[in-house]
Every structure is written in structure tokens, then in C-alpha cells.
Amino acid sequence: MTKAASEIPVAVGPYGQSQPSCFHHMKMGFVMGGAMGMAAGALFSTFSCLMIGMQGRELRGIIGKTMMLSGGTFGTFMAVGMGIQC
Image (cartoon, rainbow, N blue to C red; front, top):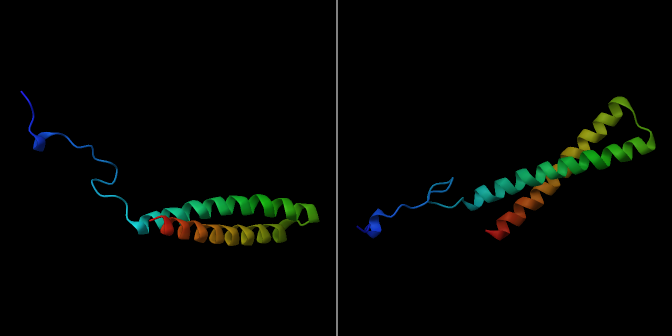
């Protein structure tokens, strides 16, 4: 016996039959870029601040600000890049 064309099983992905929207791609780009930017900001600012001799509260404040700044900047660029790719 053969199956009719309407009876052939179709693979369903994690998003069902539809593809993720362009907004979803941009959102994921921002999140990935933000995470990478924050990690890079933490590494570079920690190294730079320790090289000039910062300590304590000042060190933590500068590292936090640099992480947020680099995460936001890189996340924005990644979101724009993903939007262009859509």
C-alpha cells in the first residue's frame, strides 16, 4: 500500500511550521551581542584598571560601567546586522 500525498508526515521544527520573525532575529542578535560585549568589556576593563592600580569600589564601578557600555554598543550593532540580514 502507498500513502497519499496528504498523509506524508511533515517534520515540525521548534517554531512550528513558520520561520522566526525578523524581530525575533534582531532580538536574538542583541542578546548575543550584548553577552559578548559584556564579556569583552569585563576582560579589557579589568586588565586596564589593574594595570593602573585601581582597587575596591572604584574598580568595580569602572568595570560595571564598561561592561554595560560595551554590551549595549555591541548588542546594537549585532541587532542592526541581523535586521539587515532579514
